[in-house]
Image 1: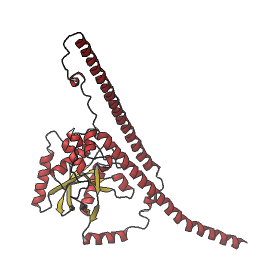
Image 2: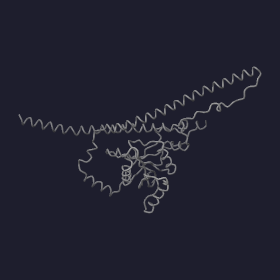
Image 3: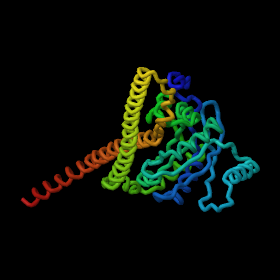
Length: 347
């Protein structure tokens, strides 16, 4: 009861890191690794981020991937320590500042993802996770996001109690489960000069594939993932409703049992007999285990992310339609002018 009524003094906003600065070389390494190993819906590419912390800015200056084919004798911690030891020998930033992971259609939220990020944030306070989507990048939109768990989510994981009462105590919801950190890509002046030269060398027709108006397949995948998550959330909600009905039924049975005992004791006292000994009701009626509420919260957060992606995708698709309409109007007017000129010439 004391835990239910207490208020946790946990800040609502995490001010540890407010900006993630990623070098262009790191972005290129992440893209290369994710396209090689994480392009399918089954395989997930993961790796380690290295860098340093400057005030509230996290600078990611290097990274290396996790090996894909692991044997039974492989130790992940020893592998990371050995890689950072080799990087330190060649005078490269070797401080561990987080990890990265590939995703498909923005479906990266899971209990395993939250547990991994919780482990990183408890051992390295400034750590972040970078999420990269290869499919969206192929369509012309670089999808690279940085995330951290909120202080409420970290406190909930430390308690290791995912019941409804404890979640309410920490004032946690699916909207405050994690937070996105602003991300910027940093390049040296020489790299910027090289990019300017390369942009002039690119043919003018390059990039026209990003104006493709065929959006049905992408929207279908988003909606399919959204309906799957809604179905899973509905199943978890039905389980919680069954639990609530069982609790109400058990409370009614307890009241009937206590009333029956009181009536029997009253009758025994009227006959001059000794009353029945007091009995612990909790031993007769065992408490029903509370279903954990972490999985429904994660599903709700994933549904909200899918809705945001669908809204963003629809706005981009509408922008393409208006742009194509604006490009077609000068061509149609020019064709009409040519037709009018040819008709006059014929007359």
